[in-house]
Figure (spheres, helix red, strand yellow):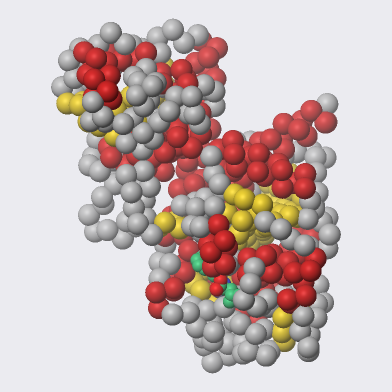
Length: 502
Ligand code: BES
Ligand code: MN
Ligand code: ZN
């Protein structure tokens, strides 16, 4: 995908399609349409409520009078006073989704409205959205229904050289982050039989090596040597062996290490505690945590961030094979704790336990796991908001700040010690389910037993990782959620450490 940037009045841009942002009734059209017949038309249509200018709305105007382009796509940005990263991203997705529906060589995208409303950093969000809108979930369509185009960003004529250089950097960042989101989406959307653990591990290895990230893949024998009882227990029911992948991007000198841990269940049937068919339909995406960890580290590497980050992803299927773990079985985990398995569908916490224990052994300054962990988190927060759990208030605050900055949604949940009582087993140290109430919390509390008191946070992304039905500004399927938050978090960490180091 190519993104370039030009500085030119919109009316003279000679691309077959040009997209321009408009705000709602109060904000109206931006300076790029000023003085044109289109401006008057947009104002009238907004007044007559024929159009709303809401984020994600698109309106096509063909043969616009006074413009060289053959067609203008007006992209709604919502309220000008409330314009933020989410609105910019949403508008980008919507305009790209619409324009990529058939082959088009080149599309101009005006930056005037975004720059008028606020922070130039939102140009990155817009570009991220455009990248994401150009890629659909139709990986196996015999006729592709999405056609990526070349993006030409159009800066207002008065932009200084310095500002233009800044915009170039933001556009490049947006392209890198957008592609990382797309990688996570593509991996989640891949059919489960095409990404068994060992195959997915090799895909990760290749992508990491391409971007200069150190990568190690453990096979089943090595996983056994390393005593990952949780991962082996879950994998026992599958004909496909598990894999464990570690990634290292160490470009921060003596800066503290951030560890990212991902749940990578390539298909979750529930195991012997079998899921009903409808609940299994989207369980190819139960590896989203792993995909997001990998994609975020690759983005950090491509952005050459001066940070130290390590990734750990545990990959397995959760199946019902003849050797599958049974209810009442006891697993001995990496850190020596024993776990009685009373529901094989609570498999994510079993594989994360080993991965967290192992990650903690290296003594990172902070450790974050991402997992499509519980349906209970969807019950608590709905399908669009991730649950955040942490033993460290500063860490939780930093993650919340980063998510707010990019417009992704999370909500901090309690993690009091009494939730541990629900995990008491009469035969082992813990059981893997905590009863009917507060399921997202008891799951998180289970994970905490394997964090060795490292400052840790857990994001339950069961809701936001997946969208059932497509809309104008979103595709059905994997969302690649929190790649943008993690990238922003790692950038912020780089800035802080950069100051601390000199
Ligand atoms: N992968 C699921 C959680 C999930 C549910 C993700 C819905 C996305 C959408 C997880 O492994 C699971 O099955 N959790 C169980 C836990 C229960 C058995 C304690 C659940 O949520 O029902
Ligand atoms: Mn499960
Ligand atoms: Zn699962």
